[in-house]
Amino acid sequence: MAARIEDYALLGDGRTAALVAKDGSIDWLCWPTFESSPCFAALLGDASNGQWRIAPVEPVQHVRRRYLGDSLVLETTFETASGVVEMTDCLTWSEVPPRLVRSVKCVAGCVALTSELAVRFDHGRLKPWYRRVGRRVVAVAGPHSIWFDGPLAPACDAQSVQVELNLTAGDRCDFVLTCCRSHEPPPAALNVDQTLHTTLLDWSQWADQIDLGNDRYADAIRSSLVALRGLTNRVTGGIAAAATTSLPELIGGDLNWDYRYCWLRDASFTMLALAGTGLRAQAQAWRDWLLRALAGEPAQAQTVYTTDGDRHLLEWECAWLGGYEGSRPVRFGNAAVTQSQHDIYGELIDALYVSRCHDMPPGDEVWFLERALIEHVRRVWKEPDNGLWESRGGLRHHTLSKMMTWLALDRGIKSALSDGHDVPIDDWRRDAHEIRESVLTYGFHSGVGAFTQTYGGDRLDASLLLLPLRGFLPADDPRVVATVTAIEQHLMHDGLVYRFLGDDKPGQGRPEGAFIACSCWLAQVRQMQGRHEEAKELFERVVALRNDVGLLAEEFDTDLKRQCGNFPQVLSHVAFINAARYFDDPDHSLNAL
Image 1 (spheres, rainbow, N blue to C red):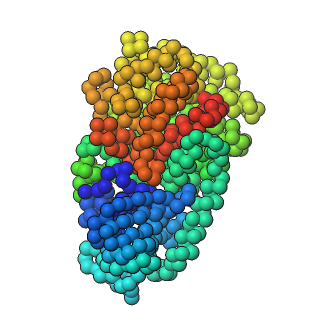
Image 2: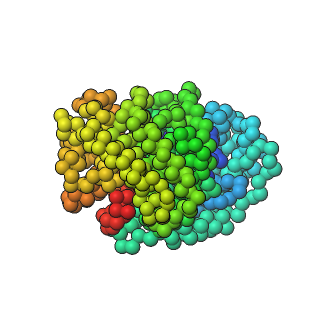
Image 3: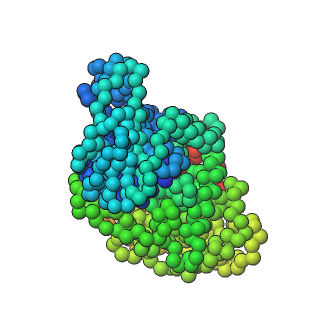
């Protein structure tokens, strides 16, 4: 069985990510990119679906982990009755071809160590051909090959590659995996010391850009920024929503989706988290990715893309993977790519507006794209859509989607006036006013006494906390206050916020875990309302959910007391960053810009 979700740490090299459990097992790695087929898929099956475990032979009495500085270079310390070893794991930054390094040093006593590598291709199904090349082993299947280098010639059979070592204090052994195409020549041997130094230097130079002042949550913010960089494609600037697919929103359930792609709904939250913490280069790269992804006809904009900007993400179910703790089906690809989500237009225009507010204007030529998007919004805002949460139950008039089309017009008007663009301002203002009145008239349910998920529906939705966060209404507006109260009364459990209740019927139950981003949004709204102690209490509850290396999944199961959903989750981390910053700087807000 795979480890608990919160027991994993993240490795990243700016093109892909891996998950390492506390027991020294790498159970997830899609190579060479986020969207590639996993060569280690034990996370969604078992050891036979691929993993690489390095650990002491005798029982481990204590494990502690940390990242070295502001990086994703992971150090794990194993203590046994006989001795202590430190293992350093990293996906090397900018290395071509990509490499995975695992370096183990005995720091006390003597420790027997075992390494077992089981590579699988084709989403954890295909066993490769292992063959020796001198002291090396290469695993080959079709177009793929993975080279193994270790401290001595390993044993190998049809299932795995094995190494057994006895280390005494001061001894060190290095293991390296290299991802290649099978037709390419063998990769050169790696200088592990130099590569680790170069990788840490790259992380250090990046971290030097972070500007947080004396923020009370500075360390936690930095951890989230590190995770955000680990999910960023360093070549294109695209940011994967998570490193994984099919980690369940409720353990044992079937809400298991592939989140290894870029979601436009995260656009402005992410832009603010990066630009508002000094990471201008990364923010600009994200903005430029958004512009490239949206280039063309606005009506053809998608909700989801690969980190390279590809549009084709066919969803399919993987029959041979048993699912995380039996949570099936396991899905690759995401059918949300075909959905209509009008909120994305507000996200995109707002992301460009945020970049302007942080002195990163996208250039006059971009205005033609923005104007085309706004004109498209004017044509489609009255139409139903699938909504922020990608409902697969048909098109509806989602309150938040309508508000986000208002946001597109509002930010477009502000940008046009500030930059002197010649646009039909009066027409835009008229349409913005019409959308606003529509939301106020049909989005607020008098019987419920709150804004609801859809026009005429009675389902509460925690995403409507974004009404004050986006500046649609003041946080102290009576309708906002009533909505917040309703969310607190009906969508909170164990101090955390759920997105909604089950299947349009209030009281039917919780179909998933508490949504971490929504909990951060409520903490920020409470702070805006002057409810400072309540805001702090809720946010500290979220802070306590982070694992030992500062990572957050999408959700938290308040009954099982476990993280759930895909991991680590960008929306959780950017909501965390923005709420944490707002406690010390009220100008760090989408509403304040």
